[in-house]
Image (cartoon, rainbow, N blue to C red; front, side, top):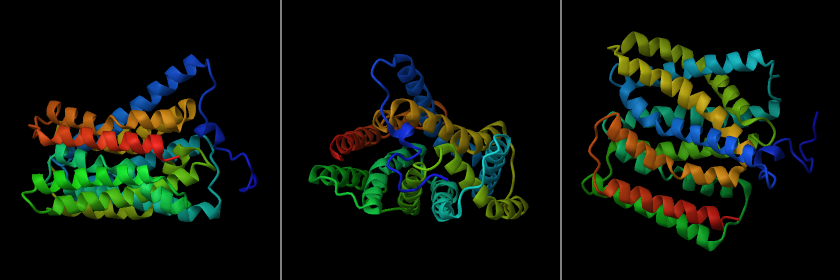
Length: 309
């Protein structure tokens, strides 16, 4: 077994920048990472579609069960060994934050909030993750980093209050809670990805949540009404297989090819892509403040990416 304190962790390949001249590797990695971002940007519109036919608890629980079945099949087919017990606590945090908490809270929010509004608020996720990561790892980012992070938070809070008529709605509270739990899951997942491939992190987190998700799905299916439509089924399948598992597979693989720094720049496009999907797929009319706030948040995130080291 590899020593945890080894100077060269197993994930060093995943975070290293590609060697100079490896143009094909860079192109392939960029394409894979971009596919991951597209998958994630479709999550909110797909959730809105899913809510057309499923209750919120049904959508969240069945989504987790389906994603766990896909992940479990991949882990079994590749004969991936069960993680060491020292990893179980971290996997539980990933499961609570990414598998259960974020989908549940954002689904509840999308019952009364538009996808455009939600995309701007959740656009703060990279900053929230960076802050929690700094706290978790004990790193001391520069003052410029914290200034940009606070500016981004101020933009989102100002946008949220303005769009909610001067006060926060229940949907906004769900979204802010989703930011915190998802950032915690991403932070812990990033730590675990230093010792195992990233897709295995989310895969085992999904498996760990299955004993909770399966009974919850059975209860929800029995108590919430179902109105199956093409939109609702496609939405459910996308959030379960596309967003929850396959999107993360290509995302982590892309990061392995081009490095975390380069891949993180692609992530800046996610909120704006979601705004585009909200118009094209849902027919939402964007308030002028939405794209303006989204761009302002992206600028703040770009600043933190440059100065956080």
